[in-house]
Image (cartoon, rainbow, N blue to C red; front, top):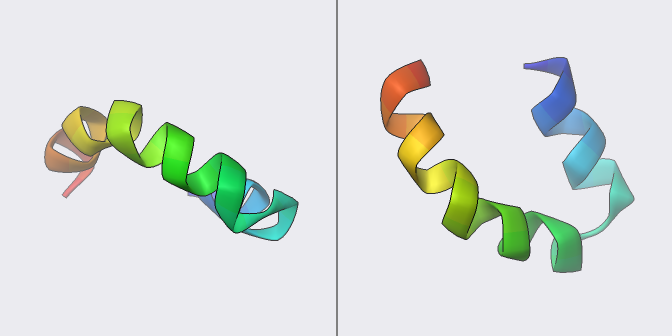
Length: 30
């Protein structure tokens, strides 16, 4: 979860790009 927070602090730009890739991981984490 810490990694996700780090991305948020990094910037929405990075979050949006990773969101597409993390979307699949999100389902696994949820």
